[in-house]
Image 1 (cartoon, one colour):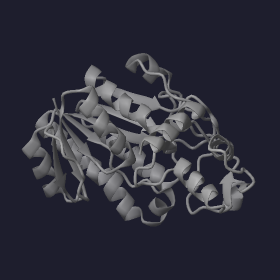
Image 2 (cartoon, rainbow, N blue to C red; image 1 turned 180 degrees about the vertical axis):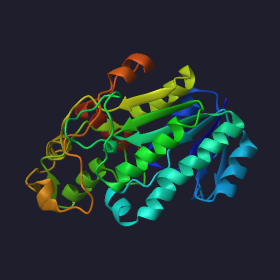
Image 3 (cartoon, helix red, strand yellow; image 1 turned 45 degrees about the vertical axis):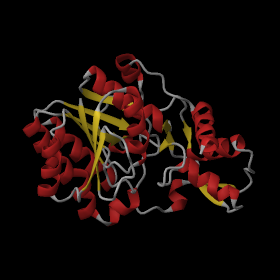
Image 4 (cartoon, one colour; image 1 turned 30 degrees about the horizontal axis):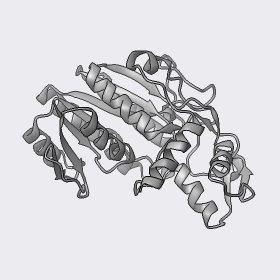
Length: 297
């Protein structure tokens, strides 16, 4: 099998690539805007401006994959609010390009999305709940989903939330908390934004199961524990044996972020567990995995 990964430098792709090489015999094409450091006989890497439709098409068509995994996106929620044209280009226009490429190559398109397609009034959400985004990031990601679902191609959309893992060169919430508390820097964390944080290897394994079992449709991927960002930060501090005194509670309204945030977000993952044969880690188990990976490095 030949698999192209778009956004090969992303947090999810960084976890997915070695797992694919270990778990499958697939040949991989890594497509990224920056060079991807890898040396493996089953891997080719292409540096491509993914917003350049012609360059993206040429690179992927040369490889002729059976599966395209789109792990590329503009995910900075406040930046999306302020740089809407760029957010639309990366979260919608690029997806439209990939739809055309998938149709031309008869490839299965696997796309990552977010719980921010919901308004956060009544989470956690199932696949049957109707999206209603309240910020531009969520709107652009929903538009990307719609570009796929209306295209008539084989596709799978995996929505996830608060993805974290070992240090990967890209910051996540867990690494941000550890770094701040390690340097005795006070942090303010919201008490009223709820989610079920997702360990990155669980998301990567969900992608692998989708590919292996040729599952199509919509799946929600989220961790076993539902909690506030503030409680998550305190559990990180306690686990890594650093003081919780530097974690200061604040409400979303007080924080005055540029983009509105869904408060009761998060995702119900029962369908994914049943159809993909997976169990997703809770916070404690996820942090054990983070620590193990950090010590290995």
